[in-house]
Image 1 (cartoon, rainbow, N blue to C red):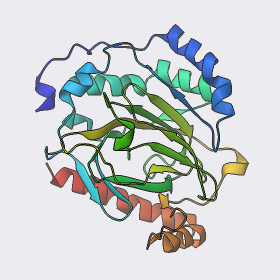
Image 2: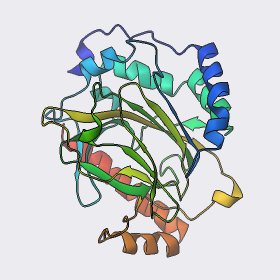
Image 3: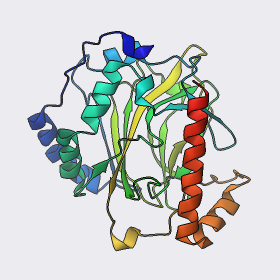
Image 4: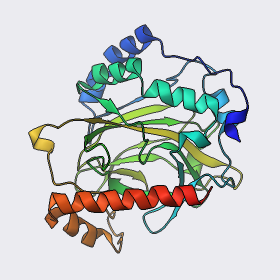
Length: 285
């Protein structure tokens, strides 16, 4: 079991002054980010801080992963902290803690951020050769906490990652007509972006890394109680959107349903889908 071995990262914490300086340095860059607010920071954690995470990162063959394999995504995810190693749990606790949340508020200007202790949709992500995640806008309300999703945080864990292997994090324009930015998922690269109905992103082309490699990352999401009026919309789950010339069979229907279904009904649907996903995750163990 991952939790049986000790880890040198236990007791790790963020340096408040360092994060404050990073927030001040990159605040304007986040605010001006195109096609939607975002910023990328390299060498985000102190040297060697991620080594224990890599050492205990579950291999793709282990049974703990929640496995998705459909036209929208082929990926592995793990959100149950009891199935993670101690170094990973310690870092996730810091990423959901006071110092880091204060940093995010200072960096983005979004006040009243609330972390998600359930890591719904987040935690550890892993994609093997041939996997992908089509362009999409994320769900906008947490079905258990009933809060508005405002920020995505990604930390990449891929050493010596080559450009030709793909797996770039792509930021698309509002109409999903052109890629505005592509970010290589290299080791210790941090990305944070604003979560709205038009923050279209993904890595839609099949991964081309060697069979023994995988695209690994940590993902966390942050919420507020309410959001700006110009960002409000009916509750919806993840909305996948086809690129030019790409037809995703269920995308048009899903967008129609999300637009016209009453919010109370969508909340109930989201709750059912969440319970089923969590149940599937447990059954794999």
